[in-house]
Amino acid sequence: MLNSKQRAYLRALANPVDTILIVGKDGIDAEVLKQADDALTARELMKGRVLDTSPVVAHEAAEQIAEKTSSETVQVIGSKFVLYRRNEKKPKIVLPKERKK
Image: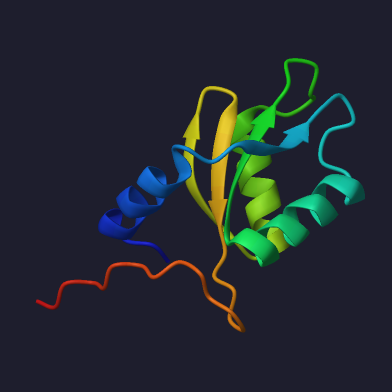
């Protein structure tokens, strides 16, 4: 589970990242899930977009893809969303640590 500091850090990292996943009129099918899973394995952080013709809205798409790929939703704005999943074998992103109380 990401805390607010980690989420803000990932949002900043995702800002210049290109959108690589498009959810279209077929919705979230096996091909979309495979693309998302492959992208998260390779990059850890990915940006997706939901087209107007899609049967799901961005928030629903982000939640469903995150659940099925064991990732976390970082942000949803309009028709775009950002997902994160740490690569356990070769991590590329180092998240800020939680502050101890």
